[in-house]
Length: 263
Image (cartoon, rainbow, N blue to C red; front, side, top):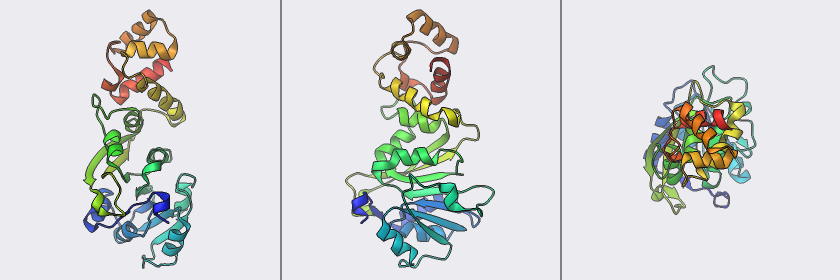
């Protein structure tokens, strides 16, 4: 059942409440919950928001939730299906509030990056609060210059403000995972640094640069573009970026400038 799909069910009531708090809930909110599992977070959400749409891939768990086996309130609707394939706004329906919807969930480690990518694909939610592997949370919210700063950091931070809120130890789950987890909050930027139509190409560009992170930036750019040293360094000079720096020292905005100049 849940274990087959890589789920570890969160039972700690204090942690569940803190996740709901992180959404800054109101009684007019519609919240999409990814992977409700046994409904522990779902129940707490339903007490504090207007409506919960719970998307569950596991057929048996979805059936039990839908039948009210966990005594879920009437403002919860259960959708059986793969969250990566489903149309999230469509699952909310026509009665979504004008301010949009929010997204949360204790998401399977194996599909964390694709789910984050989907959550940050237009139409964007108000806010996303995910419980993820601690290592992933560190990477998502990392600042330039650290070892955990990389392509995932840049990709997320060009479209959202990323916060690593708190750590959750393995003992808060049944069965306990082999690693600790953490809660991240992603708040979409009013003016994303990268247009939606460029997301895929931008991610490829950033990933390729970080694949050459041991090289100085000028050399890494030349490796990607086959450009001459003089041309590459002249363009970097125009951008005000030293060719001798390494890519992990650059903020997300500089990656966007490099992408626009060289991609």
